[in-house]
Image (cartoon, rainbow, N blue to C red; front, top):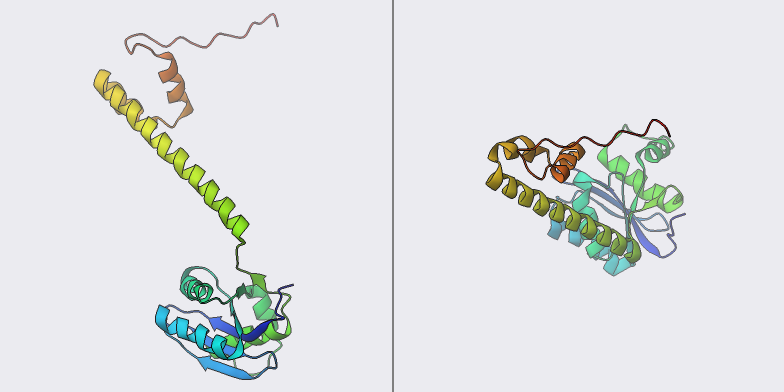
Length: 205
């Protein structure tokens, strides 16, 4: 379960393209924030830092962590706020427990904040540990190195083919990533000579 013991404000965000609706509640359920900040870094930073200065840790909860939700989450992390994700299905089920008007941004944020305050078990952390981040960075670095090396090798082969057999380069150059083309180039030492066929299996075995 997501640890909310030290949270001073539960700030639900319903993210949008040009603005986000925010609703903040203290652990006792007192509303301390209910505004629609624009989707800009300075305004969002103020939304996170002002409650934090007065109430302590601000937990930011969203129902859409990707695409248009990326900027507020990035700013929240940079401001020192933990961030969490309330899955859409869980949110809809929880919202059905709240009476009142039909779905609106204001109601959604109130539901998100109150659900995080009273029922934190559906929350999912959006934080990566330093160890996981380091491992992913290493893996991405390996992948980038391999991609760059493959590109350099392909360009070198195409350059050699262009020098000695331009027609062959036009045919095989765009297909160097195919295994059959690699097999041909390994065995065709002279473009004027046909490639030897692989030895047939011994039928006596």
